[in-house]
Image (cartoon, rainbow, N blue to C red; front, side, top):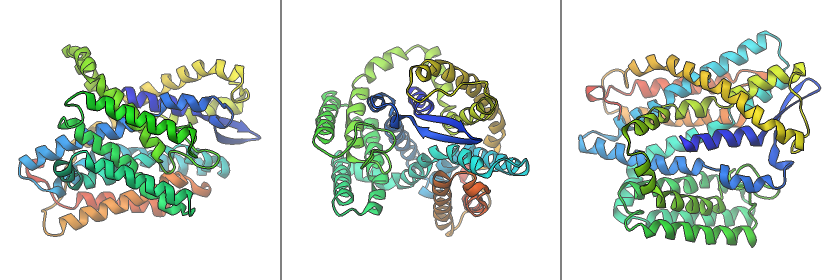
Length: 414
């Protein structure tokens, strides 16, 4: 939950919404606040999501294997756990664009708002692919241990070299799986103790990461900013070896303090509170930019809220009020959405009888959903001011294919 708080705070601070001459726009505050790039060393916490995701996927797949069940049911169940709240978000986004079109909202402003509302969806296709690859990646971890993320890290460095040397940017997309996948492998190593027993291995990971990060930032081409893009090269789009070095530093430090955190959460009521909050993580992640669009679209055109120059003293002075107002909207929004999503838990994890076609259907579902989410993350809910009908149809087909791939035994979802 602390990680999602960091993501929300980072997006609320670093994506600055403006309204000028009747047009809503989003600007990267790091382009106007020079020293803000150092702040990203505290705000970049997506790395934690992938490490924790690896830990959780290792536990889930291992339990599934012990029950003697197959990959198809497990993947479908893990996918649907993410896709039900995502589907609610996508449906609401599509309906909002449709209503805005009927109301005559400016198409350029609508396209911009729709893009801002989907920027963060990049996480889902990457994570879904790592879920699908978990059985293979976990088997590799059990055989070769920490050599697997080491090889992936070397491959990621090679990808960066090809991108920066011969200037082949398309190759860089491989790092979405190599860099985030390396962190996912660390989650496996955390789960079985490979990375934490003995505890000094955490310190070693952090020390190696810090030394590599310092080298890459001082003598390499990579910017300090761990969020957004740089003038020449960025660290997140696609992820770079510098981001991976940063993640190693961060992961080592977090795992080193794990015993202290466990003692802090030893009281049952604290653990229950954390468990309840953790159940809201996906919903908070999906909806946290919605209050930004609501506040900016409501208060900026009417002049109720001032728009000082980004990075100015007045701009910083307004940040506490800005964050407080967004939080006041996000909390009830999250509660409302969670209650709306509650009936979805009663839906079956699959329809019909399973057969030889089930694995192929699940893979087709995965491909369609990943493709649709990638397009939404790039183009938004309203590219050119229009509803992306083909993209939404692709998403719906993928979801239906996942559901129709067969019913899991005893209604299990993995």
